[in-house]
Length: 142
Image (cartoon, rainbow, N blue to C red; front, side, top):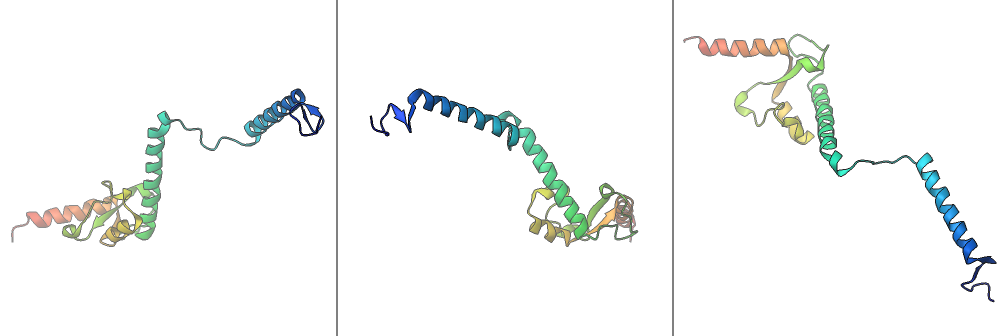
């Protein structure tokens, strides 16, 4: 019988060959489960939740970038304790293309920067004072 016949494989029988393959497969499966964690174990049913989290993460990232781009503190009083208390006020509302808080942070960073150039970064208190001054100016008869 030749060394390359179907009955033998390098001097081993077919049965020994299949036992060897089975053992190697078992070892490989054990190794991958122990030493190689699953990179993406999501299911289709988890997709909606994953996308919500991914969008929220991107919006937080863009908001942090926008705050840094705006100076990182209130342009009127210098407040910088809480990023949540900072917002953008359009200097000229007629030139406003989109609201930054109303689905604005889903746009590209370049478009967001163009809109930020039309704004000033202010804290919540200063923002309300600005709007109160605008309202009082509208109510005053000339």
